Image (cartoon, rainbow, N blue to C red; front, top):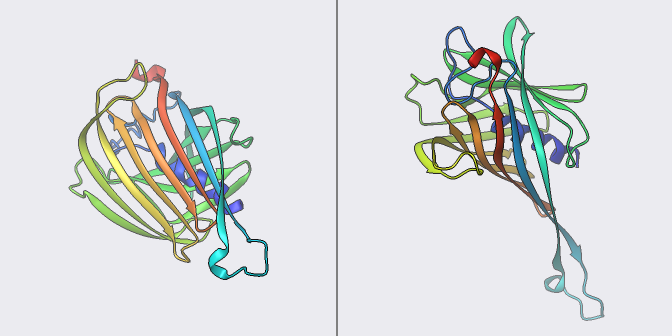
Length: 243
């Protein structure tokens, strides 16, 4: 369960990120992370738990042991805010905060840095427990970077993992009542624990001037459970400095 909670945090961290960075401003066209910006998302979470049930009777064989499936689903509102900057090991980092909701009663944060325009996740926090991502995980390359796909390997806090990313630009989608037909950048990714016990598969859509407008995430704990998280933007409030 602890690994699942950490994976949900990492999934959120991969969700709320920016495309590229400006030299003197950690905000950008595809995700304005200016302090004071706020986003609200409508989220649906579906969980499937798998457990082994044995067939009663003397004739039971391994082939007669079946997997039973229990499903649960819930809808919630997720609030995200850009809270400014903190210094991590001498480097200025953008801080994104996530409010308490009906899925998690714990407050969490993610920390990002920009290196030559590349956006990288460097740390996550659940309540007062901080977990470093080593080495920093590139979420999106800078706008001038021609990279369209890349890989990552390292420590995430829930174990050693490998990650794979791919960008598809100019994807037109519908997202929420007020954000229909937005031209966006789509990012597909998968993170797999080296021991094979857990994986995250994601697709994210970022719209110019707004940030994330839609996401689809599947978290799989091998032979135990599957969590599907689908979010669409409900409201975006830009910071005073952007108005």
